[in-house]
Image (cartoon, rainbow, N blue to C red; front, side, top):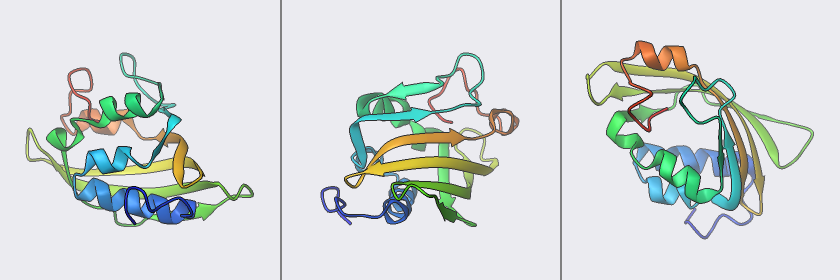
Length: 146
């Protein structure tokens, strides 16, 4: 699936493709999967961190330095659930790798509610645990990592 070859991609296929791009540390291609007016939300964001990003450019700015903070190695246990809305999925997964600054293992569980229109992400609610990130030694106030 190329950056332009996802117009008919099912939400689950687009999501799996996005995970491969994150593993490849291809943030530009990952951001290219987002609609221009997409919204990314973090309902559990701690104080000082964004709760809502509006637009592809805001998502790009947020993710720009992600590989400098977290070296992802894999996404075991990905479970994608369909919903009654054909354009929306619920994803349960783990991201594993290492924290770049410390070398400590990274192992985070995520739940996301993701909507897709015309083969692009339009809405992404990311329910990650900010307390677990702090325990890993990531300084949320000083980095763009999540």
